[in-house]
Image (cartoon, rainbow, N blue to C red; front, side, top):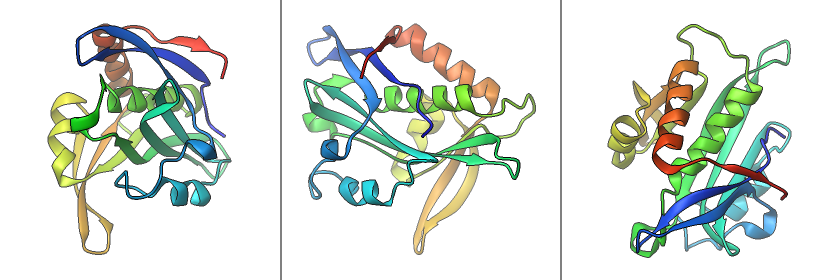
Length: 188
């Protein structure tokens, strides 16, 4: 499993108060009930190959605020070279109690890529994801991922591909830390 452990990370409540929440690998019992989330996380858990994939949660007092599922791809020589974000979901904005959620989950995945993947210094992708059309401006304008173009996500469903190079990944993590604060490692 490709994981960087467990963290406490700062978020803001709706009242703009800073609190610490947990960012860590999820367990099967953390998977939310189908119907309450867009993705069927219990089914995704069953399909996850934990040798090369992981599911990470952001939670506050055992309440799941968001989940991310990613895969690490290896070269023929078994060297990790790319992390792909497969699924990323936060609780709906109308019931979200803290922010940012998705950015901390993405930060975890990017840090995993920076820690495990071969850090090529050219313009190759280090982190890759396909976004739904409704999230294109989020990944392009807020996260500042490099846009690659339209792709087919599933039959009849198009998405937009984004990537971080090593430089882009480091820049994102630095911007994120400058904006929201530092993470602290904790025991999981």
